[in-house]
Image (cartoon, rainbow, N blue to C red):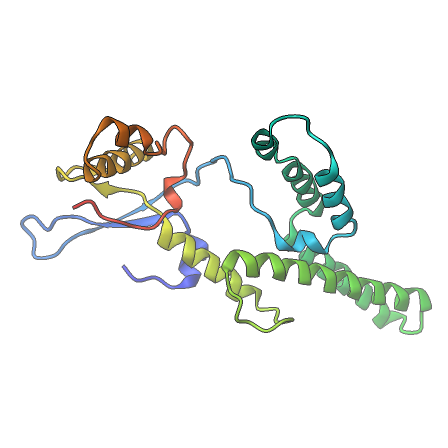
Length: 233
């Protein structure tokens, strides 16, 4: 089934499966929609946070704070992660910030049409332009990092390209069902994770030592929906 990027943006969780033709000479297509699952997100550092005022001072303060435990335990604490999450939360929704900045600038410019010589409105317009420029730059950095596009020139505000690239990559990496070696179609997330472990256990010999060393995705809360496609048949 071929779709375009606009279709993926509108229905990002839809899937299509090819059923067996049975007595027909055509294979029916089953189109299904899945509700987004609320999974625990892994920590992800956003590059735009480095543009924040006081970022270097915050990092320096956290790194200089002594932790009187073993070195490996101090690594697992990851104290900086909490600070960065608070900083990202303080930034809010970057796309919503851009929309609000555009609306505010438009409202000021409408007032200037009625009173073009008002010094206060002229000052407010200059400030609104700076706020919008800063908001769009932060949004561009965020989208460019998530879309993993490094080839665009600095200053290019191609946010639509970023949104489409993100949606396309997510759709290509989702796994909703797999077919086991015995020919059984598995659709449940827990069953998919179990089949992953079972497949590699058999592939690597099936010994107790090997089986115990394989990561159990379901126990770790691993998100199997966003991994590369692969087949077991």
